[in-house]
Image 1 (cartoon, rainbow, N blue to C red):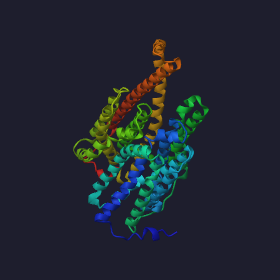
Image 2 (image 1 turned 90 degrees about the vertical axis):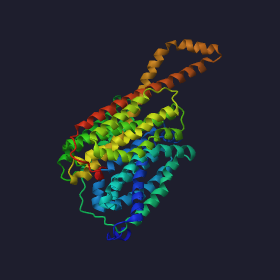
Image 3 (image 1 turned 120 degrees about the vertical axis):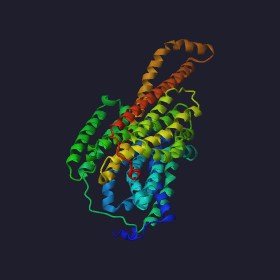
Image 4 (image 1 turned 135 degrees about the horizontal axis):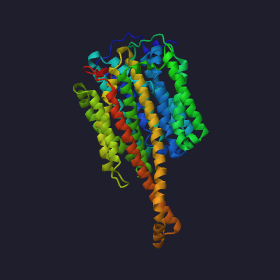
Length: 514
């Protein structure tokens, strides 16, 4: 099939002026949509679960199925780009995103929606690294930083806009519109990028794919994710199903490691881990991002299921961190050039840890204003963490290994987000159960309370129910505080990891930082 009829002959002059700007914004929009999709469903999980008739804890599959599919396709991007050309893959995925979003909105059962979300992750995965590659390709060398800043902005604002948009759409138009809204955006954006990039050089080369490695990757990642998601509903290792999954995950992972290290053209080139700087920065990135994502998942769930917030207000309470993030991004970029980036990352993560610690002082009468304070502060710290850490990871590998290192750190970050979603809910649910037992023990005086209520004219059933409601509410509250304390610990652990990165020599070049 002759693709040049659609994509042009690759001899067009470079883009300039308004054309360049339009192309850059639309390429950024593609990345924005994909990143937006990781969190747009977070606040609507209770609603989606309710309308499809499943429990809220099964609803979170909507988040994890997408994240895992997306993580798996990130390593494939290199091969796809070589074989078909970056711009072609990007445009195909862009338009594919529209088709799959339409399918997701039409889902009538959880299984159908999850199938759609997996497909969405598969077409969305390559868009993240490719949008960045294309931005660096369309901008002339001297404006490369502009491309990076644009990419970083879409990556930062996406997760923040997600809860706000998701909440408003969910409350006012119904959850399917979370998916429908992206259909016209993706069709118009994809076609416009096609027109603008038509005839631009899009080199291809001979590419071999490591089929075994890819197969093993899918096996261990899927087994591990299903184990984490189903574990809390199946009573963990007391269930044979969970034990089987755990064995598959471990065996699959070991086989994958051995294969990738001996294969000539591995799908995931693990050799960049030989650089201490990359290994430490990528691990910090994954652990810190996991804790950050856990916060963004648990906050809206708790606000909606226990404090009676609507999806819209839960979105505002979560998304408010975007304000400082956008304002401080340019300043943090400047600071990275003057100060030791390791210090900035460390302070950023420690700051995120402090905002989580701040929340442990909340009680069930917390006001929106009190909730908003730590979340606002998160914006600044989030940028201090995200911007330099990717730069540090890239600066520690040789130039020809940068594309692979970027793919690998993106893969780890996305995976950490998916795992964190499962783990944080498990911690939260377990803590709720433990705290509830503790409260019930403390309420052996409960009999007096019930008799007191009955004296005021309550029936025994009403009195017991009222008391039950108070213990439920309080145990969830205590569990939430416990969860935030655990998240705090993870943040502080991540903040110490960054010091394993050797002191960077000279200035970090931010133009390849993502």
